[in-house]
Image (tube, rainbow, N blue to C red; front, side):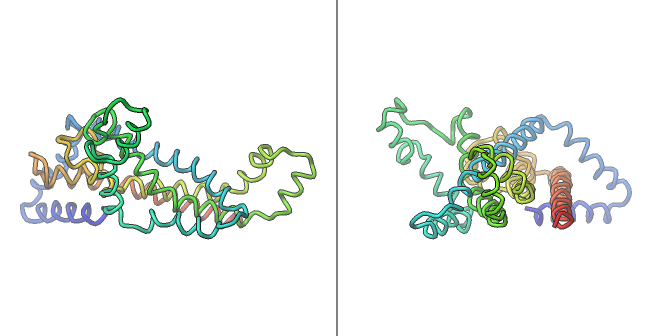
Length: 271
């Protein structure tokens, strides 16, 4: 989504060059108009919830999965290969698959939950304001798990077995050894996984758009889909305002990239 943002910014700059300094003031006015948009607080809140929840849940689940896949058991390689499939598949394909899973009438999720007696009737997961964000977050976690698990698995592979043996000799319990030995040594991988996930999840246009495209307004949009709707799909049809959103998005992405580069440099220094 960085490229569409750049296109919008380029369009705004072209308008400035054609009409002169007055148009430049109009361009700056787009940011003032952006702050006055009624939907902006909701979209910002959605974005914060979307990014923080997916990153936090993904990291917690990935820690457990990485620990499991680092152990030796029959069929471990098959499980590892299977785990990578959701990450390798197209996001549009995966998101569309979940649209069918969540379907009110024919979705297997409603069928399974109603059949087990968990629900008294089917739920409109993607049409109910109370469930649509949770349903999208579940898909975001599902898609983010494989990559994060493999990053943490690579981090676990760098920890020498001698360290764990020394902890056992000193009488440390498995939990104490994990908390005091494994997690500190896993910190570089955790920092990299967190930084990359923030960038990846923030830019998850296909997931939000595919699951939320039937809902009017901006009640469940993030900053990325908000920018697109302002430019092409809403009643505003305002490229200048969308360009302002794009610049804000790019700035946020650059901050995340800077944090990631700092993490890499810190890791190199530790090495």
